[in-house]
Image 1 (spheres, rainbow, N blue to C red):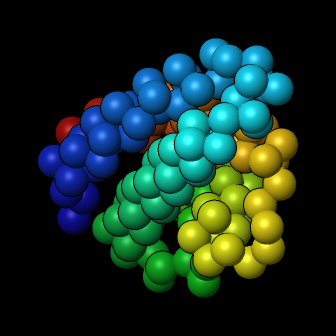
Image 2 (image 1 turned 180 degrees about the vertical axis):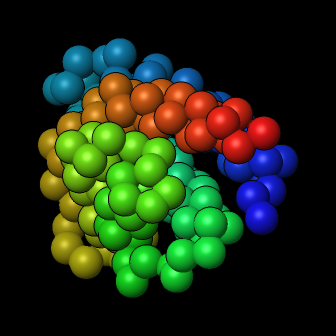
Length: 142
């Protein structure tokens, strides 16, 4: 059973961090990349936002009786299959956020600051669409 309060709480937290990401990406690329503190803050905001999206994904999928996806990337893809919440092409595009989150969290390699900047830009562009789709899905379940 879907817990709408949990989903709304996570979306609210995502929205708060997304505002901060918008402030960061309003800077020029060069200005942001030259500010190590702001760049580190951007990485952390991205990590939190993407982690909360993944939490929502797993909750929605398993609440529909589906088994949990094998990885975070697939949690976005699954939302274009069952339950159908995201457009397939959009799901494939936003799923790459899972890989960025893993690189940030696990420090697999030195993170390319340009990749972080592009991740912030993509988040500001795509996450409101993700949130809208999730909210519409919740509304349809009432």
